[in-house]
Image (cartoon, rainbow, N blue to C red; front, side, top):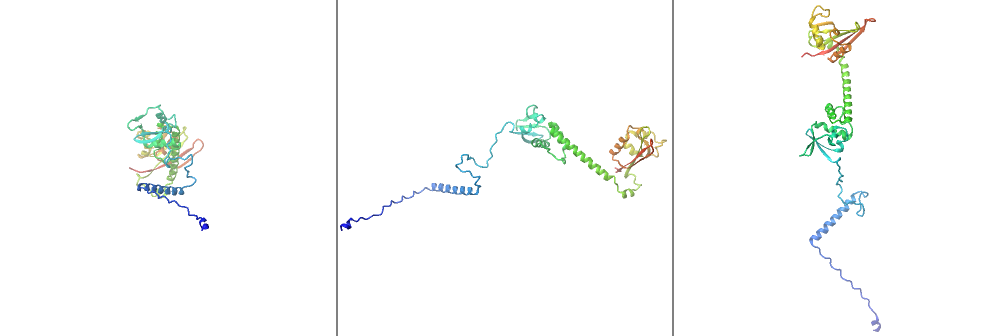
Length: 319
């Protein structure tokens, strides 16, 4: 019994009961649930982003501004927007652009050298010039390149505007473009004239002499070195008077009894430079400017008695 009494029994440790979880109010539970959902969405968004572009919250340079909003640059007097009303068309630029060429008239308008009208109601500067052309002026100031191509139809107007604003580099570019355009036009006209000179033989063959009012008009020019230079012309009297109106009185005063008066409608070898002060080159130029083309030419003679003859032809369309 004593041994039994001496024996001790080990009793299990007493476990303290878990305190019950406090209940949340419905509003607090909704807040926790919303926060958990936001954390899940944030974690998902970060998983889609490039890890190299994701900045940790522990980064000392981390900017807490919302991404995607542009950073506003500090404006100055020269970069601030300037609103200009040119002939009713509104443009927006800056003093830096408008005064790019300091010696130009446009720059002097905006640097205080030349007074400029200000619409105090709209705060627009007003320039009474062509509004449509001013866009090309601004484009040149911004890019320093020619703002138009050769196909531009208002080249003369733009050149006049560039001269008004006194922008020498733009004026020089536009003048070069105008010369190049004129040169190409002349080249095309010469090519067209060379094609027109090859008239259809069938049209010439089938020409009816009864229809003298239609077809072609011909003038023959003879140039010889007699007395320095002797120029005679042959052809229909009315056509000669049209091209050389200064000899009309001479033709009227000598209708008969002269070698070159063959009939009332034609003259043969009329001494042209005897009645007007034209040399052979000036005579040929005037004929070409009146629509005539050189269809044939020949020359001959001996020393001191040479001559050259030219046949001029143009199409005639009666009114």
